[in-house]
Length: 202
Image 1 (cartoon, helix red, strand yellow):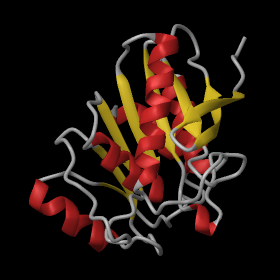
Image 2 (cartoon, rainbow, N blue to C red):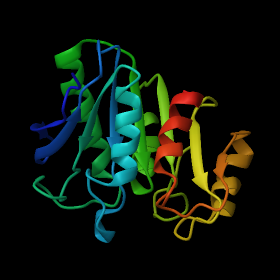
Image 3 (cartoon, rainbow, N blue to C red):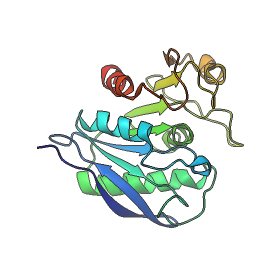
Image 4 (cartoon, rainbow, N blue to C red):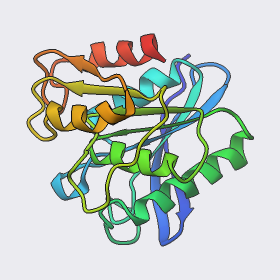
């Protein structure tokens, strides 16, 4: 029987973080935190790309935590444009480790969430990093370099974060970028292939 997602509240640095937990299907062999897109444009933890990634990872043994970061939905605080949100993610990681122990950690994010995940990875150790439609060049804080084994997935026809911007960020790092041909920022019509691609390339 499939384990169903649940919502819980995690204590963050500026208050409560409303978080969807997508349990591992089977034994939990890893934990993942999946970050949502820009809340000023309606991004929350129910975003379809976020939930597609969480479902794909849950089928691989990860219990996935999808928080609404500060100022989003029922979470406390005020949106901080990617600065304080890193502290929120670290609080969720600490909670997950308190529940599951020191299992392998994955950080993931879509758009703004990818920017936050990359910045979090620069602060704490993680075993895997997944960036989908990552928002490079959009914020005053630069997107940091990432480990060489980071899985970067982007739409060829992304109308929000141009593929050219991601390539300019990735090129100096020698970082491969997996491109979905004919695909927009929100992976419309490509969510099932996106989930399968995450599993195939993980």
